[in-house]
Length: 136
Image (tube, rainbow, N blue to C red; front, side, top):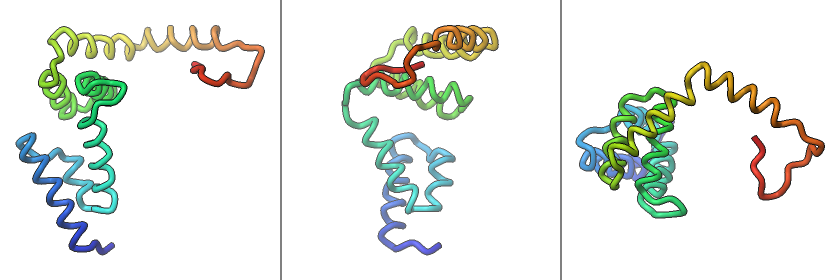
């Protein structure tokens, strides 16, 4: 697959920004950068999610990302998100609580308990979800 010079330059620009900000280019970015058509939109989406304040502040977004990294056992991402969360104002206690919550929710006993609770609480007379409700 061929890519335009513009795509290649935009990819390089983003990789240099990552390296400048973090001192290295994460392996996932190195791999995705081989496909500028996928890398550029993916990078821009991730960048906008963390750059702009939405319903959640930046600190909370990094704590969410830390929980996701822990769930996937992504050591590099866990370290990076811990640092980003701390830079955004997270306390050691907040970071540890996210990691402890992950450990508890991903233990075999917690999974068994959640499954049993879900099965007993999902009996409903209506099969149609109600607008504005979350069905678990």
